[in-house]
Image 1 (spheres, rainbow, N blue to C red):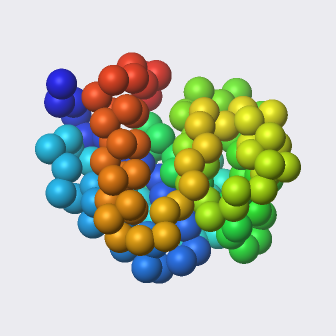
Image 2: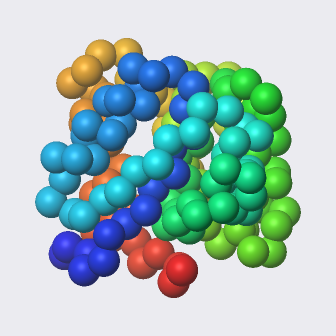
Length: 145
């Protein structure tokens, strides 16, 4: 099942190589996907609240959030998203290299919709991106914008 309108994904990722691979994976999609990338937690909150230089930002359908980012870390960003009535319905996919049980537990406690570990090789990376896309864009019904 293909979506009829473009899906907006906010990627919160400070590693330019990872951000590039995420965008590349979604560009090759059969779904119409537009990605926006911010590199730190403060910019993520500004983007979501359409503040400062992000006043024209699209409302994302999904947030792909790394935990280890500068400014506010991913847990702080997640706490703000899920604590804001205007943002809390946006699904947040934690996409991080951390496998620490405390990070996983805290992410779910704060309202993460899922927790995905970054694979270490390119094949694994594209498989994970494909799986995220398949689940979130073809199986799940996203909340209306």
